[in-house]
Length: 158
Image (cartoon, rainbow, N blue to C red; front, side, top):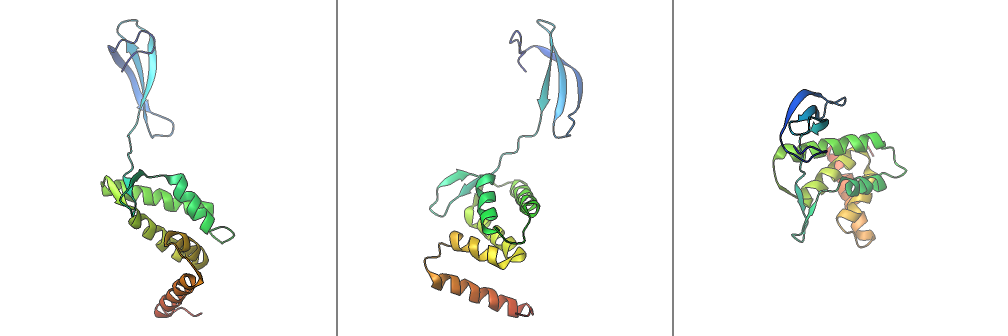
């Protein structure tokens, strides 16, 4: 660690403890060159996998982009912002725990659509219309027929 005062890299740790949020380690250091003290924070670097698009392009995972898509699908529907946030937290944890460096966008899209189908069918169809590139009313009708067929198989009443 480089001293912020004299830029020397020779220093020692005087004190070490968890930060208030317990997501980092706070370290008090003393520079062995100028004897001044400074604080550093050490935390785990969580690198999200790259997302492999359908056309084979790779781009960084962007939570805000996915959040906005889900939020737009759930607009004026009975799905809370907290539910969306919790879902994204769990999804990100699953991606990190997978240990994969790249994840297909289809994996992400299917996870989102599965959760939306569970939450609200209208939000699901809205998201699916963008994700699956619906071009006309026939595409919507086909997806709704599929939803209704699955509902009947599951024993739910219409």
